[in-house]
Amino acid sequence: MSEAMLSKVRKLLAQAEDAACTPAESAAFTAKATELIARYGVDRALLAARDPTTDPVGDRVVDVVAPYARDKAGLLAAVADPLRCRCVRRPAGQGFTLHLFGFASDLERVDLLFTSLLVQAAHGLAGTVVPPGEHPAAFRRSWLAGFARVVSERLRMAEAGAAADRGTPSVALVLADRSDRVARRVTEVYPRLRSAPVRRLAGSGFGAGAMAGHRANLGDPDAVGGPTRRPHLGGPDADPAR
Image (tube, rainbow, N blue to C red; front, side, top):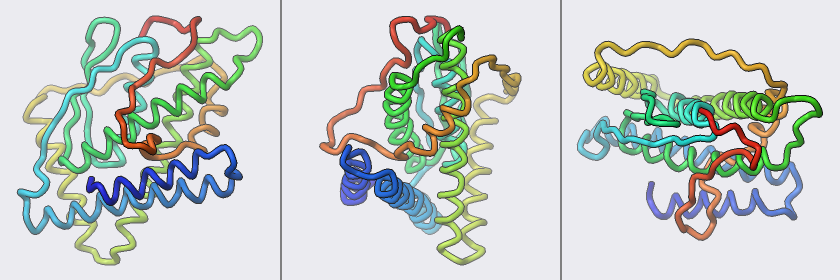
């Protein structure tokens, strides 16, 4: 992402995270930042359709560690899919290795958003009280599932809106072709890939996590441009298992 675009996104998100902002103001800043990120993705796709060397298909590996490694991996997948990237989860010790596939610009967007959303999820969990009598880990896992679900839906809507704004059928064809090319690359590397089974969660935190997902800033929250660390989720009583 260009420095000019990144600067705009960071400024909007810094305003959205200002404690002096009303919820309506924060939502407006966040919506604009999301729009810019989505428009950037469409613009890069159209440029690459004319000159494929500007945005090649690639891959990268992300290590996801305990606690809540499976839930973090789910969040990464929830971000990657709307941005036309695919991820393959592989067990690695107490966590997972996520092998991401996508066009260079889309992988860049996934990394930006995932890093930001991990920070926001950690803050959201820290500020959410576990109901009396409920197992903390079960509640937090369901909270993270709700958070990921809503974030993914919001990203999908932003991507569709950015494509619609271009107003030509060729945009949809370009984006569909990019998704197909990424899928073919995944199949080349993992020809016998299996889908993970549907996960069943017992906690009651899904609704609270979904509300946090609606409030989430969909971009890098670091307004000064320094690296953002990917935090561990959960407090001292967090379940160390995946």
